[in-house]
Length: 369
Image (cartoon, rainbow, N blue to C red; front, side):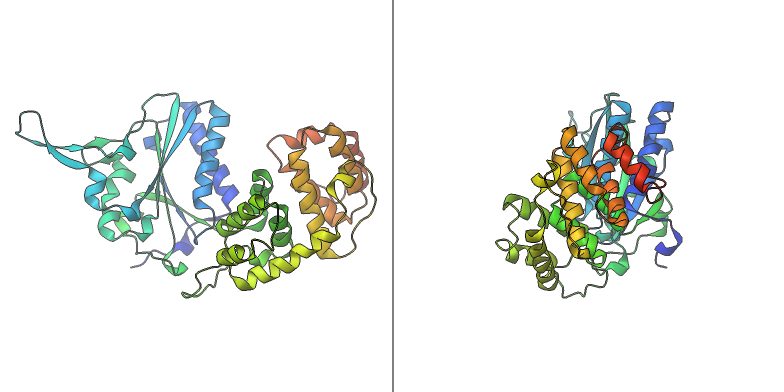
């Protein structure tokens, strides 16, 4: 019988991050052993952000507890059952075999440290390797070796329906895990993208074309297709080439496919028609684009520029005054992006007179933000 992922909760990346990080933080604050918290299995299509979620959880734990959080990323597909147990050798008097623990499981037991053991690509492993993970997920032991008490265990993998390499998970293993399905969600991805400094061209394009964030119906022959992972790759290519998408076209196409890359290239030409960010943030222009695609490009560029100058109050205030000239729905998009610049930035915005004026004039559109 195959595992029915439709019967498990479906969450965006940031929702899963919030739930899991708050669970682990509560365990730390109350002194609850991590072994009392069920090991988690994250399901989802390739590139949706499962690995990124683990790094975000680690960061939230560090911020909330002051502890150092170390992630050990184990790609189980590269292991066989013997690798997980270690290498056998003779004991000192040559009478018994002992097992040398693999280096990847050599974790610090210092209580000032939180370890996260991330068992990635578990669904791509043959069932013999999945079976070897039984002890890790439930009993927290690997052969003769025990995981330290300060270790969290999280697994992740693709679904059988994702047209990736995936084996059906044995029900005995499935029953040892708390299951969550990660779904593509543009708003969740955008908050992460603004916070992480993803290229404004990528953010603007995907704001206009949500459907290109991830290709759910890619065929087995499609080697290059868009996912949050490949868009992050495109952003890095643009950042290293001074946002020159024409220069990087072939590599961009190699990440997201030629069809999507052509549309992205056409979109990037819109940026040449925008007012300069310097003129907006220095209060030297009141020119506002009229076309919808240009407005999406504008607010993503403003969010990116604001992130780089988040501590320059005068520039942020000038941009907020300019925001009053935008159509109300794009004003809301911009403010959401500003709030996502970093944790606590909303409170900093509330201290600015320009933001107070913005709320008084656009309050009915910004309700709840």
